[in-house]
Image 1 (cartoon, rainbow, N blue to C red):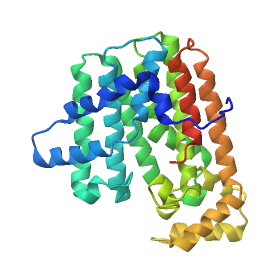
Image 2 (cartoon, rainbow, N blue to C red; image 1 turned 135 degrees about the vertical axis):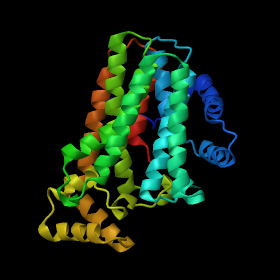
Image 3 (cartoon, rainbow, N blue to C red; image 1 turned 90 degrees about the vertical axis):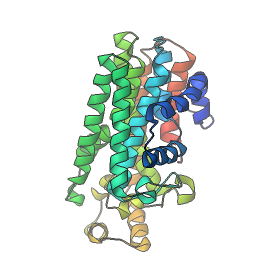
Length: 329
């Protein structure tokens, strides 16, 4: 991947599509509008925590980079954000998380029942909007993505033997849970462009998404709560096995593996045990391996962009790779 002289900010990446992004919020409000009180209240809260609009940004940049000029792009960008929000609502409920981006989760603010129903509501509103467009192609792509994300969630629940969980299984999980939606966003943005561009952007999104998730998993080991908005070591506390741990376990002596096994067997591991596991993962080279793997995927993503014509949007997509692997939150 090309060297970045200064850190890339998301607003810099969003600049070529800033005007369209300003309209995405209005489209989100239009699509999810409801007269039912509790749904309206939950919607208001969700729209406050909608985040950085990274996936809508990718869709709009892909549309611009392949010269598609799709008049539906802003609506499609809102739809991809709705799918993302729905998965976050369901994830928080499954994980019993109480905070997301420094705000209470839907399950903490209302209940787990409301969170499950709200996730379903967001999915269904997104599908209704796609049907309204009367075009099977974006519907086909996003239907496949949402199914894949659901299977990914189930894969994570089924990972019973934590210490035997391997890199191939992890790759399959992050492809389904995270990368599939980024790939879908890029592909849908390019639907009205040339097929070669659409396919290249789909592959770009998949590799970018995997690098993005590996970096996210790294941040759990390396960054404090003040930076990420969630407690350091939360994945370990919740017994989630990610790439840094997988890579380190392969080299750990038996005594160190016993520490990790103790953590995984403890229902609510304390901060000292979590901190010790983090130290062992770093000493075992797990963090360095995950960084190398993210960089490798970033290079593969960048190679796909060579198939697109030069443009400010293509440059922004290239910068989004650096943003994905160099961010701190």
